Image: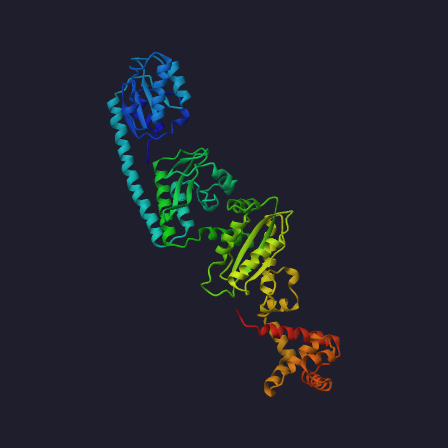
Length: 530
């Protein structure tokens, strides 16, 4: 056994022979027994350090209830594991005043109906404790080697958290300073049991200087540092109806927290962004088993999902030079400063996703425009900000994100004058830009304009420009001729040449429409690749 509890000691034959009976503090029998101390002193607290199982015949116990309560208070204040009293000498039965005093302090009180040899009890228990401590040391070495291995190979935080959960058999959550759950492992429990209302529950538990129990739910909490300052913390949750935390749980959590601290020094510090990216990608592809799971994971990262307009935004930064900095980190910092609740993470190497939670009654355009102008000012005018329709249900985010991606696909270099783009901004040029890699579009352009392009290349002419100006003028020859700086007669001659080369009638509206699509597509295909 990794550690002895009061309940474990009571099951030992050397104690069981005394017919032990628990008369107070029965719910605290899971306390760890660090040592056994035999004493007949009335004030033993000065010789105790906490965690001892105190054995006594009760001979020094006073008759005065107030003094007896003071004796129990001393033991409880120092944190003893329990009090064992042998009947037959001082007491013939459990004294009501002692039972009441122990009950008030939640201190386990065990009465032995038969006499036992205290020396045998101490020898037996101490031998088991030393064996358990030796086993704990061997276990600690194994755990240390395991976490060291993860650190040396640059494991991600999810692996440290999962390993701590596997070793302890308990749910483990890694969170940052603002109580957002960055990574978690639920140890077979449902996400809802672990993550439900996470930020609110987490704030009820203080962060100790080293691994220790904290908060109303009895969490085990260990700080995670970063360059001598607090980054966040690692939390272990108790199993419902399971044994209380013991030294091994504390050791595992401390080792995991230390490994995570080292990982922050040697690895990528973008743990928050990784967590946001994971949730955003799962929303984009709807990998969740239920709406409840999606809600819990989003809310655990601080995004309110009810009573808000959820606005998906896709930022395409293909044109941003390498080394210009992290778009997602810049976005996250700006939104945090402005107080906007959002998930921000990378969807791919060239795109960043943003899911904002805005008040339903508020206007979203000013918020998005402010974000877009800041991005374009920081990372250049080639940054594309595409916005999907606002939704009120998290399950609708997938469709809205898809629409934002389609808008981002359609915004080419010639369409980037606006701070941000929505679906209504996608016209014919944008549609064709999104289809520029489709071989059917390329074939269409070649079939419609190939002979004209070849003629211009062979003769150094510019009939393609003439055709484009004519089509842009909706077939008005006078306007088109003026735009290209030609006389009407010269312009007419060029149009006749175009008709002959392409085998079309430019007076036919359908022909002009088809050629207009082809000319627009050709312009798109000639745009430089980003």
